[in-house]
View (cartoon, rainbow, N blue to C red):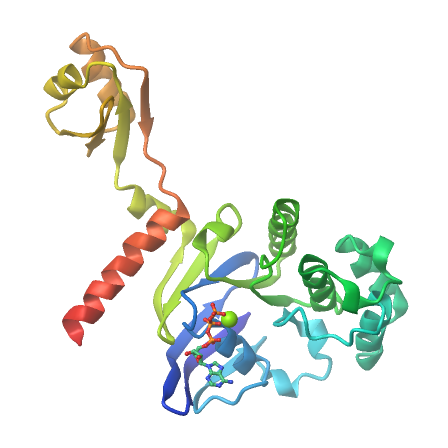
Length: 298
Ligand SMILES: Nc1ncnc2c1ncn2[C@@H]1O[C@H](COP(=O)(O)OP(=O)(O)OP(=O)(O)O)[C@@H](O)[C@H]1O
Ligand SMILES: [Mg+2]
């Protein structure tokens, strides 16, 4: 469990964190999403003790990160995939970290395998592509077999196959009971992987919600209809609104009720489907409200 409590942090005139508060529960993938500059990386740096907050506290499994005797075994993290000594091989990079925590070469080989880097273990990390560096960074986060994992933008620089791989890995880490926090400035990257999302903007939490609830509220009980006779469909469904030359959307009815109504009126149709909001839609809905709220309050 990672706990972030009332963090405030100022860089000169810039307020980076403005009361950031949330918890990352075990057994779930928690997405940490917000626009550039929202304070995601700063929060993670504070959790790791790399930045000092002006106010607030952070705890990992009930303790401050700096007090942990074997931190890599409690919280594994990836903040900056380029933070490595370029002349060292991937294996030596991991071996050096492992030895600092009393871990053996066996763990190193295990995480090289887990991240698909076994074949390049003896190559210098300085020559790695961004995607390979991300894999190496993830390997170091997993080295201590930690109970919690915190990854800052792990999808950055990954090809489509790499993205699918990261998603699968995150899901399996959570399925093993770990607390997993993963940041992104793109909600779409977290589709089909996050169980919970914490949406942040201007240094504080805008929404802290399960993905299931978020998608249900964003779908708004809408049903999409495709028909070659939109006029007849609208006559049968006065609550509908046209959305294109052969499509309309009905709110407040189930898909089954829409089909029954169309059949009852003898209206031809080629599709009736419950609208399924994407995480991106839900994010846009939420942040639009947040912008309006800020506009009213300021
Ligand atoms: N070392 C620093 N010195 C000065 N300002 C900083 C520093 N680190 C962060 N900031 C500022 O704090 C704010 C939050 O930045 P942060 O990097 O935490 O955002 P982020 O959510 O990680 O954004 P991104 O999606 O771009 O990675 C920004 O306004 C940033 O300019
Ligand atoms: Mg960042």
